[in-house]
Image (tube, rainbow over all chains, first blue to last red; front, top):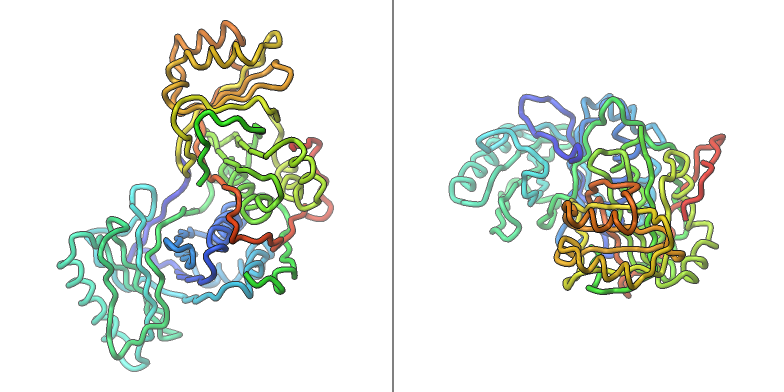
Amino acid sequence: MFRDSTLISRSDPLHTLIILIHGKAVHGRGIVLLNASETETRIKHLDGFVSVSFFLSQTHETVGEYVQWRSPAHLATAFRRPEFYEHLRVFEGLTSAEVGFYSVERIIAPQDVALGPLFTGTVDVQILKLPNENMDAAIARIGQWGEIAQGQSKSLRAVVVHADRANAKAALFIHHDAADTERAWYADTEMPEIDRGERMTRYTTVSAPAATEQPLRYVLTSTVAHKAHDT
Amino acid sequence: MLSIQASARQFTGFIVLDCAPVQAECVALFSASATENRLKHFDGFAGAVFFASICGRFVLEYVIWKGPAALAAAREDPTFSEHMKVVEHHCSLRYVSFSSISNSVGIDAIRFERGDRFFMRLHKCPAAESVSRTRDLLGSIPELASANSLFQMAEDGTSLVLLSRDAIDTPGAAALRTIFGDSAFHHEFAVVESVAPPSVRERSAALYNLALVPGESPGPQHIK
């Protein structure tokens, strides 16, 4: 029905952000709805936007965002627009966020990964610290693990290996067939874990608009009231 | 996710917005976010469902309050109408009705999950119709009785809104037409989001304000 899908492809050199937001369960639905709404109403109309897929953990304590822009320059330009940044301050102080800027290094799957209604949308996300020396070898080790894990699992549909070489980070996007399947985390003494998303389910994907669509125009102002709010 | 108990009687509102050229899903998600983060914390809020038509042009909002007084009190708070002013600026109001004559039909609870499909029919009655006769008629239409439906009748009995899981087939539609006349509006919708009342753990938190871009005037219509 909606433009509710995107593709993760090795051949498409998109600028990818993976964001993990951790907070209290009572805020989880509010965060995912506000961020999805802001993306649908305004951000998707900014030049260079490709897509954002939103994920929410079963406990509602973690929100994941898989973000695609045409290039770092497009994102940098968008970042200066109020339509982009107004909502970012709303949950500041109530949540913590781990943000990385990635390229897709490997897709361990028979084909490119589609995020959309046809996919069950269950994912595990893991962020790792890459060793500064010989990142390529470290990424290759992750890839080998992904191949073995997929060969041993009946439910693991894809492992997407991302790298943020400037900040020496790797992100694993691990796609499963169903929510109740066994988890598969990468463990390596030379690559400590920076962050981990609890098992998350896709909420929606917002992709670039049709030519006929228009953005909503409004001003969103974060209040200071929440700074004294302890929930 | 919102669930309506079978045979529940409530104070409800049905609002239909014409959104072109902005897409209906965009407006529905915007309203759902504002409701989840702000409106649901008002006393008397009992639930809301936000739909987008499959054609992408219309938004349907189904809102439930504990009573007219609770809604009137909420309206007094400026926060209540902030997002509506934005919506009114971009959309035109096609239909609105609030009424206490609002019942679910069928034996099971009705659940509204993202992506669920519903058919909405609006009938403008040629003459005021009685509630009991309307309820009897709706109960005799198999698609409504078996598939968990809702109806709302205007307080003066001159309009009827039906929300059903299934399209109403020819005999059922003919029966409706006999009493209520031709359907004035009939579209298929998908649930974009539903918002349940807050749990006891959730505390009210006005985390942000919404306003029109300076220099832009609000639309001429008032939705709620």
